[in-house]
Length: 436
Image 1: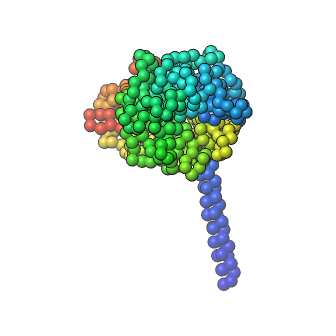
Image 2: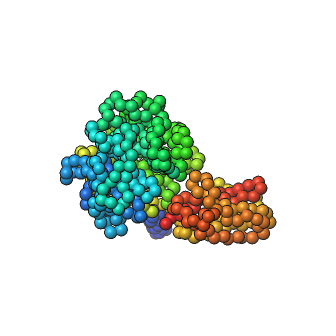
Image 3: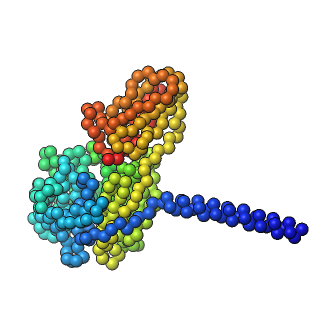
């Protein structure tokens, strides 16, 4: 009897150990798949309060504050992520900290961030990525903003928030102003939402198609809000959904690869510098806000960019105001789509392959009985790019190839695209990613 009990207990122990081993292996697998920020290098000229942009697979870091010089700088740095090499390639007219920079028609445009009485505080600077100095593009007092945000879409530059340092605390400054690159005109869009020159500062924004998402900022405390501005008509709405925690002085970036917005770093009223991130998704439905992977370093007034399938974080300062030199990088996950129902009556649409793709991909659909169908491709703002099929489809599986070109034969840019299969009564839409 004792021997039988001993044998039984040994078998149970073995089974428990096997279960524990499986659990540990599963846990390890899940942990290994979690997104993690990695230290990938160190800045040669570390700065905080700068802006970073991407052009031709290179990262440009503009302006900011240098610990070594104990001053704001005019630098435009070029960083090559593949070689980890960095150099100063050009200089702005003025040193800037807490400003806006963006690309329009292959040129870089810069305004704001001059926290003193200075005639160049009214200037929109322009740089061609070749010259060693920027030039003046246009002059207007509404460019006098410190800690603004905004975006460039089509021919318009939208300026949001900030304060007018050079003109003083009583200067007139609308919350929203628009600059049109074609007409060179600056127009006030919204000067009623806030008292002039008492505007939110250090808000974070990023474009998804023609929609500009604006997050948090500081205004009578640190905000937790999420706003949406339609860049075609500048109408704005505020979401009921809130950020996981209040945040200002961070960076928002949109990853085409994962079709998600990443909100990175900053500060709030509890922490002078934070290392948390938030992920925003499901823009077409109910907005989803979740906690993202933690940075290795607490950072405020940092810079961040998306380059292909990675996000790079550069500079910023810690809680003590010291500039951080280490570069962090995050490998993002590819976009995935789960349809509520992939089968609608007489036809089925399959996920394209490969996905992501460059520039060719295959799209398949199956038909249970003959019917007229149309297969169209749309860009992220709903414009039809190409019609891949239109006609009577016989029963069976049909596979078509798209070469990444529009109806005029021009190659389309990287980003999210939708393909829709329709008949007279029903349709199915799926999402795909072109990544060059």
